[in-house]
View 1 (cartoon, rainbow, N blue to C red):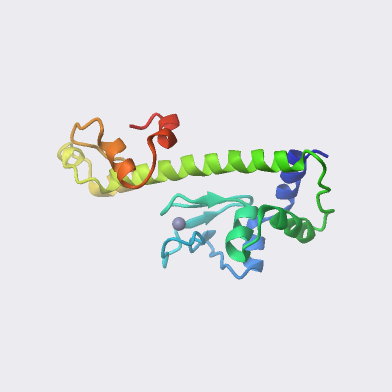
View 2: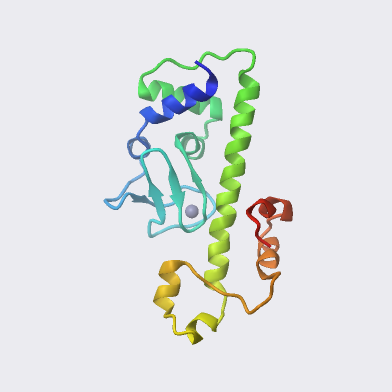
Length: 180
Ligand SMILES: [Zn+2]
């Protein structure tokens, strides 16, 4: 079995909620947890958990079982892979000559996806927090603005770009999303 098929079938065997519970992370009845990303407080659970993935509405971080193990147990990707194999009760992956290359590509793709979804989440926050009376003047209530995650700028076309740069993102990172 090649590396990608192995990883995908392994992931399909692991219920993320059970894995999180086994690591002492409490999943509430709405399938929410306190965010496990290390860089923010989260007293009211703002991170959803599905069967195979989790994602935080607040900071935009998201991931899978391997990310959970990296964050909660400090495991490297390879260690997390073995941990998951043992956890699911299947054979550990047998590394071969191309494995390093495959793992590197897999992780790069994943990091790219994670960065883009983080930028999207931050973009939503930027618009939500932007003081703009335009929508209010158009008769749209603050509740609706919040629940639909909409926002407006005051006509400054470089607004988003400036805000993203201010938050440490680089233009080449958000350019693929056609932002800014
Ligand atoms: Zn978070």
